[in-house]
Length: 142
Image (cartoon, one colour):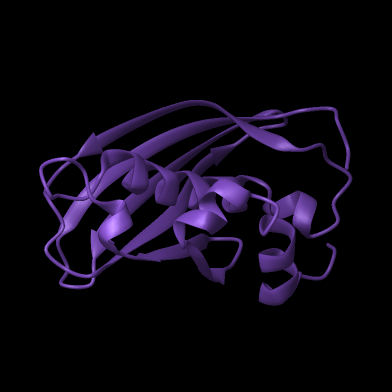
């Protein structure tokens, strides 16, 4: 098994995800079992009604998903890039706090297909959303 990349190496790689970076999302913790990302909420994350825009919540979940499903690639395994094939998100409750956190868990992994659950909550412990993502590992290497 190849050595684990450092958090700084992972952050540097995903700095190229300019949309997530411009939203203010931070990669907080990465292990083989879980990936945690956070998003400090600002006025730019508001929807027309003054709540948190669903796209901001989805983007947070999507980055945690992307980091987690590319863990092997980041570790230097001889695998292609893994991309989202399908995602389903359920919005459960409006956040009450000032920061959202997404925590990804891998549910299954095959040669080309893998499935992840991403739970999004605020710092007050409110479950805000849950996303399930199916990923496909391509033959394309970086």
